[in-house]
Length: 98
Image (cartoon, helix red, strand yellow):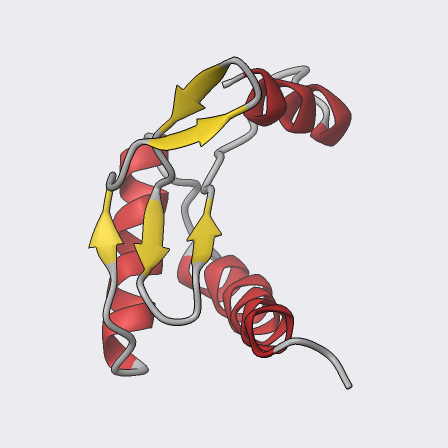
């Protein structure tokens, strides 16, 4: 059996990856904040209790601030808008560095 946090994260990932491309089908977002706004509205529509840009999470030798977090189960969502020549691998490295 998978832990509840993993199952929840997989469900949210499926929801976001299906809906966000539709939200920007006719026009690309102008900023990462615009993508975050769409994710937030999508999550609110699913009645998920989110905190935006909170809390500061200790990770390795530093800390980071997730785009969104849920208190139960503990799930953090990082929203990145890749532009230009930024690859997914480079974005992942940036998230890990943060």
